[in-house]
Image (cartoon, rainbow, N blue to C red; front, side, top):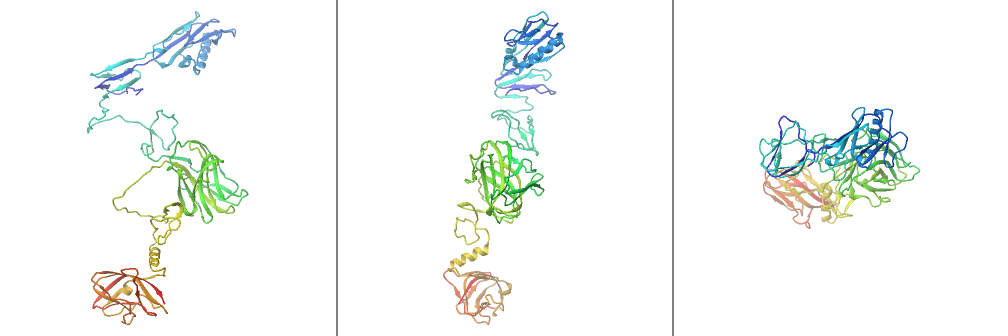
Length: 572
């Protein structure tokens, strides 16, 4: 842990050591001066860290030496020497380790950039008007071994840098630090850590393996979230964006946006390029995504006014218009005339859309977003894209051991079919397999029920009637005036399923509306608050009579409220 400084505070900083503390303290840089007490003579020299400077007034110096022009007086000659030294500081010679500056009208002050005794190399010279001091004062520091007693540093004394090489069970200022594995106390204090406030995530500019500063967000949280976010372009302006070709026109900004201040809008037209794409492209300053995972995502927001003739929407990332990867979402998975957030998984790049050498995620210079149509002659105005970004994503799993309830306000819920993830949504039918194997069916109770029951009964067209207060509130001994099933000329009803609940004991029969029990339809005995479900097997049917309606009657005295549903079909 290098560069530990003792802070300035009202009480001395204390280091208490319960084991061995090795510290290298007080390392100092060497310094020196070169003074011109008068103007030097031609051929006088100054040698500093292996470089020899020769004062010259006839443009002739000894080989390997650096010329210093003699000025009109000592001050001007001093300036010329300073310039010569500073010019060599940026080089690779030993003199590149020093800093040189004027300390008076006739003196150059030299400071070694490096600390330690290695800088204590004498400056040499020739000439009566040149005086040199140094280089001296460089210190390597000393090894301090402390085993029992503590060391107290006075904060008013500058002891230079302290390099801690090994700390075993040590504590720096016991009032503000704690030892690993020490028991936590109610009044413990610690040392505050500072972090850099940075609103936007950005790639580090430091080299791999180097130190950097932790960052905090606008909300004061350390930016260590599992999802990292990088915006390729906010799409607030058309700057550097261009239409892909003349099949795309009217590239503009629009206030109809979701993020930032604007979005970009454009139109697809039947241009001379004869492509089916309405798209825009941009050349980027090189973006390095490092090594993305297949489950990381590219995200954008789209608005397509009409999906009737749309094939898919796409994003391309690459080095240029001839080398890129392409990601697609088919139109059947989109909703027209609404803003949608689109996520493209990195691992779902479209095979046929990969062009040239594909993409290099460490050197992305090119981006295209657009809509592909079924024919190149199609027109569509008002396509909108808003912000394109990259997000890291994590593999997650979850198990639920309790009921989970959710409210969905979106008008559209889509679930991909197993075995054909890009092939659209599951059908709203009985669940029979077509081009994939559905596991759950989108909710459509009536369609599902009818299809299932119809399949059981040989594909008959099934009808249903609900038993309500209108036809199910019965008075004992009387036939209900409202028919459950109306008479159909030349046809008889075949009741295939009956499910009822009652609020009292009853004996139910089906009649023709004149207290005449229909032949072939059984009497149903129901206990108080009972439930009955018929038939008990799908191979059994209740058969009514040709040209006869079906009413409901309770043979017992009193009143009963019957509720339920009857499934039937009509046939001659």
